[in-house]
Amino acid sequence: AQSVTQLDSQVPVFEEAPVELRCNYSSSVSVYLFWYVQYPNQGLQLLLKYLSGSTLVKGINGFEAEFNKSQTSFHLRKPSVHISDTAEYFCAVVTGNQFYFGTGTSLTVIP
Amino acid sequence: SQTIHQWPATLVQPVGSPLSLECTVEGTSNPNLYWYRQAAGRGLQLLFYSVGIGQISSEVPQNLSASRPQDRQFILSSKKLLLSDSGFYLCAWSKQGNQPQHFGDGTRLSIL
Image: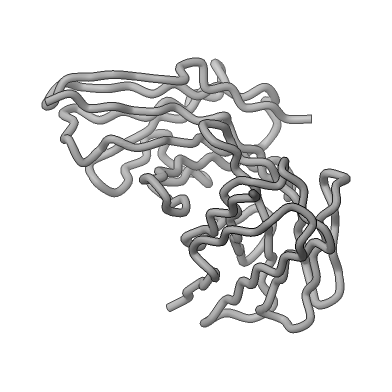
């Protein structure tokens, strides 16, 4: 079975600073990878996805992620965060037709 | 474009009362449908998923049940709610099992 690890449960960062949210998964078989964002009391919104092709994926709100097959990682990055980026971020991995979510990382942007 | 609707947005119920949460999808046909629960400050727990009308798979044994009476309608039910059923319930759909899931706005359920 697949497992998804988001090592950092909470990440505080100052406004306009860069941020990286880490995601590692266990199985190296063919996978699809996703990042979602959840604002308070809302559902999850798809930020970006990797299905195939270029390993650097750009998403909405200035976020990007890089698929690293050898390290089984899919870290999310943003060069300069804004207050409005404060939210919960979930990494998800699909193996076969099974969806696996990480436990989430709470990003807090400090003014 | 496709949209997903969940209602109600918030619900307060006494212990032992029944539950019915509804989710509908528009703009697509034969979607995969999912119910998740999110406890406070925690990740997502998959409760049920469905690949077609009348086809329900349960991931976690509990006092909840799900039904899919129509292609784009997914209902989460309980005959008697427990305190532990409190949480944020999310419905989602995808075109296929390996495609992105798209989420509704969720229902905040509080059990008193």
